[in-house]
Length: 256
Image 1 (spheres, rainbow, N blue to C red):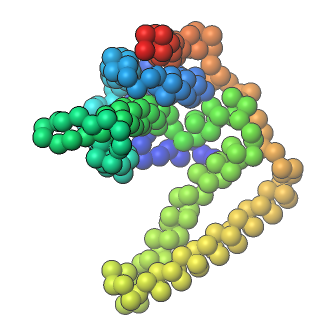
Image 2 (image 1 turned 180 degrees about the vertical axis):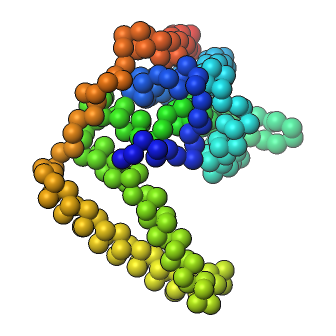
């Protein structure tokens, strides 16, 4: 897979966060997310601390709040569900702005919004500072099952190929008078999806045979053994955020 394969969320920069090896960023993000999830929902102050940590990392990575907030809209369906909980919840109710809302529903809504938003922001920061290729390299260095990293590698390698093929098929359909905006032409769209699947399957077979002819035995070379692996200093630097997050979570559990 070429080094030029990035993704739409990656933001090119020379920030200290960008320069960290991918494996330390993956571990830091996972530990931070686990700490957030383990925090009792009643510890409102703890989530403020997590938000400050996210803001500090975003500033260090030179990722603007507007960019983060726009892409965090992906969690909108969960937000709508969370907003409905105070009205649908049972048990003790409290009057808020003339509305009788469920106390348990309010806690549940806050729990989903706070933890979900922080998790999404942490994932966005990881994606904004790490290319797709580096994410796979990081997972490989962390001894992720190689079958998963191979699948991800092939998917990223040929995603652009499939998108280009789908674009050419769409242009061919439109040049022949097809207009996918109309519902009665859905059959043609479905046929195009089926044809794209068959082409992708045939292409995959050809690629697999070519790999076998070049000595592929079912395992890709271990890329984690190459240069660029994290040093002790980089692990310690990246551990700052998850260690602080774990301390906040532990304190919240003790005080709640």
